[in-house]
Image (cartoon, rainbow, N blue to C red; front, side, top):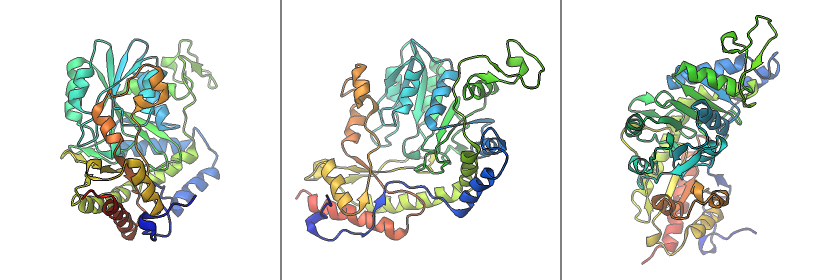
Length: 398
């Protein structure tokens, strides 16, 4: 059923805008076509080229391309030896995979609360969650803004913990001048179509540790190796390979790698345009009492993935669902990122209670993700801003 715009009037625009969308150009298509015409569709040279490009972008020594961001998180935990009896601290404001990766390994996810201004995991809350069973922290760069890496790394050093930086949102972000991907023990990336760069589906793990790199390479490919020194029963037979541990088929295809490589060549352009859009939103919304603007920490030079509209509902005669529906009626289709992970019914069945992280729950009830992707025009952004202002004016408390 078609929704009516506020006051039954004409929507601010005739065509729909969604919160995210891939930017695929002719050279991206040609890169994939070239691989389709080549000898290798998987396990070929495009994978190596893509991994080398990731190392160039992140300044990491090693990169391991995988099938998706969830696979990256899973084998990152495996490579660190996370298992039964261990605890892994993460944020609730993230996609479920950031916590599921601990469950995959038999470990327990523990949720630290967020900073209510930056929306990223709060280092002080992390400290309160540490127990003798804590083995790692999965710190998520929510919206693309880097977490407070200096503070979190210091916590890890003090308590002998591993740091996995979930950079699914933050390819291209710098922290204190250093690229995300070269700072944590392991950094994981996602290249889903709504991310800053895409390979269709796909992911990657970066590290500066050669031992972890070799382990990750085995884990993405069934636990099989062709490296003689890693075998239990080595032979120089040219056909021989040996499974030395239990791994998974988490390989990326060469078609995906070719698309990802082409997209990485545009990363600086995509980051620049996303930053311009964020600046337009911030300039408009910082003048409105009915919304809060996300705080940026000075050390994060952010390649923004999401723009969060944080509603000050105490000043509005509506709830978040009413605002969401009103935006859709204006042909602006937002999204919500995310339901706190422990509020999913599966996690509730594991005994996680509502109210565990008050700041995260407060944000969840008030946030919407607005359109943010490079192909949006300035007029598109002005339409979004006009729609938000129109709805606020209608629901504003007097």
